[in-house]
Image (cartoon, rainbow, N blue to C red; front, side, top):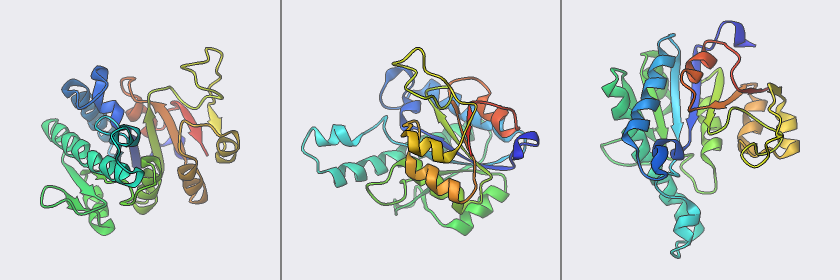
Length: 238
């Protein structure tokens, strides 16, 4: 495993909710800048970094359904929301002096580039942070699945899922004080136990490609940088 020497290329998954901060919805400027600084710090170790962002801070399928939007259209709305988060993160990174690119799985227009694998690989090799929006470009797939797909397509050595909890637990630690966190767990066990901290499809995809997953707490200062440097942070799924 690459733990001892760190990872030279990684795919980072950040939920849309993370950008909302204490507001709970929309874009919180302080939190968005804080996330950008965490990415900038992680990049200082010369790690090439791609990011997949969610859109739950702007719209979720259940919210769209409540006003009569069909499920597939609700998914499409969520995919569009990820583009807004990608643009916000790109701007926050640039304000930190970090070159960033936003790419979408579907055509957006001149504001965001369409995803093209060879172009994304070129940007990464140049040291730019590439932010992927639009999920997989299709409804019915989670952004976890999109992150797994982009990790494979960008030849990432690891996928880091930055969450609201410190790692993978045997049950929801926000509801069960006696929940036990795993330091290391196999992909098979995650799937068999139905552990919901990460989408099972993404676990299966990355397991087949032998790409480990690190699940960690986004909100702890320096966690992303430490994980990419090879320190033991959160839970490793392998």
